[in-house]
Image 1 (spheres, one colour):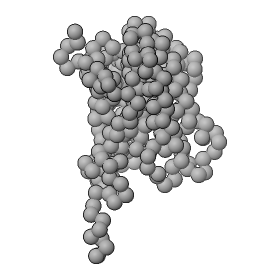
Image 2 (tube, helix red, strand yellow):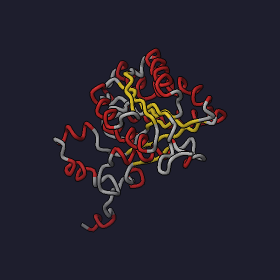
Image 3 (cartoon, rainbow, N blue to C red):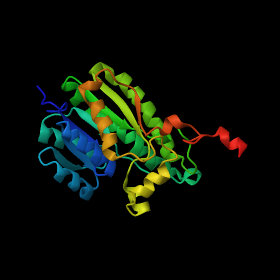
Length: 266
C-alpha cells in the first residue's frame, strides 16, 4: 500500500537535467509523491541544492548524457543505491541555436543532447523498467515544437522531433508496459529569465502576459506536477501523448489575448 498522497512511494526515478530550475521543480514533485530520485546532470552545484532539500530521497550522479558509458554508469549507480528503476524523465537540453547561421557542429550538438541522448537513455533503462512490470518515461518537448520563432532553428526542430520520438517510443515500449509521454512547457521561470531580468519575476510575467492566456510564466513545480501525474498510476491509460503545460500559449494562436477585429476600426 502506498501512503496517502504518495502515489510514487517505493519507485525510483532518474531525472536528466535535474540541476536546473525546472529540474528542481520536477524533482520536488516526484519526491513529494514518494519517489526516490537520481539527478543525472553535469552541474554538481545545482544538484546539491535540490538533493540537500530532499535528504534520503534524492541523490546526484554526475552524468554526461552524450556519453554512452556515462549513461550506463548512471543506471548502475541508481540500481546500486535504490535497487530498481521505474521512471525516466528526459529533461536535459541544449539551448544552442544561432538560427540560419548555425553550424553543422551546432546542429550535431543540439540534436545529440535534445534528441539522441533521450532515446539512448530510454533504451538503457528499458530492461530495468520492464523487469519491474512496466514504468513511465516522460520526455521534454516545448511550445517551440509547434510554433515557429524568429531566429531559432535548432531548438524547435529538436523539440518537434522529441514529440514524434515520444510517439514512436510509446508504440514500441507498450509491450513492456512502459508508458511514454511528453510535456511541452510554455515560458517557465528559469535560469535565463532570472539572469536577463535581474531576478525580476514581475517583469518576466509582464512580458509573458500577451503570449499566455493565464497572463504569466509558469512555475517549475507546475511543470513538475504534470510530470509526476504522468509517472503515476493515475495516468495508467495515457501513453504516446504530448501534454501542453503552457498557460494557454498553444491555444491562443496569432491574435494573442487581445481582441483583434476591433483594431480594424482604429
